[in-house]
Image 1 (spheres, rainbow, N blue to C red):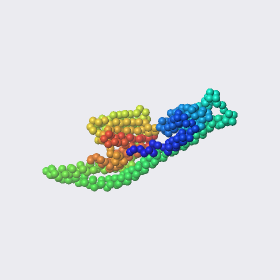
Image 2: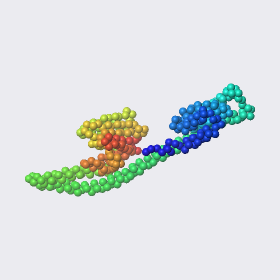
Image 3: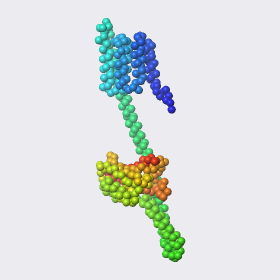
Image 4: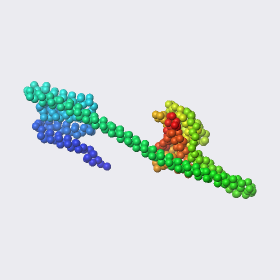
Length: 403
């Protein structure tokens, strides 16, 4: 979309153009060189935001000298243009930079005193005070402008800091609200799961007992009946195992906390993963400054094992998965990084919810259990994923462990 002229031309630019146009129009000096210098000074003033403060101040001082020289020296009506570099320096530099620009402007103006004799000029006694006032105005205006600009910059920094704090507080509040909503959903689902699981176990036990009794009563010649009874027993066992997993998720856990070497825990989890027939290789990237952390080693191994399993399922056979540790202030970050299929953005907020899964054979408890265990350790888990590029799951554990 093309930019409007208001995006490139500031209102003050028009004011400056009008001002320098008026100077050129009503100038008592009609020398083309003087008018050219006025135009150049006006151009520098308008272009100051684009060329920078330092080049602008230097160019203004350079242009002011010939403008005053050809405009009458000490008596020039253009002596007021010396305020331009002084004010620019005061609004853009610190006090020392302002003092340097002001001193240069004063020295530039007073240097014309050396030309008085060569021009057969002198300063009348009644004009000495005028000369002193002209010189004194430059540092006074420079100092006051610098103080005002510095106060504005300080206030702007305060407002920026306040805005940043509000933005961070808003982000934290949004995250806290999401965590509360998710915790409420988990609590409700946990209660529902526990109640449903207990209600299902009794009829399942009856079904299994009936299937076993049927197997014993059916003659060996009736293969179909025996096969059906066997299928019933297997499915009941599978359903019972699933109910057990539901109960493990729903019931409160008793953490066996002790100071554990994080890398030893990770090595054991990776070893279990590899012995279980892993289809990917695991690359370790451990930070050497990781201290022991209070945790339940068995539960945290299960967390890492679940994440590695998910990473392997999302990655092609023979790919590599990285397990990385980093010390982050008062926490330890454990990252499991894969370069697999990634997670769709619409699913990122739901992947830690129980029973949410995109796998045909999954039940959606793996990451929910992972999240619950990490939260029981007073930690949190985050995920960054790009479809087609992979996922990064990061576990943030406090160094002090659960309180």
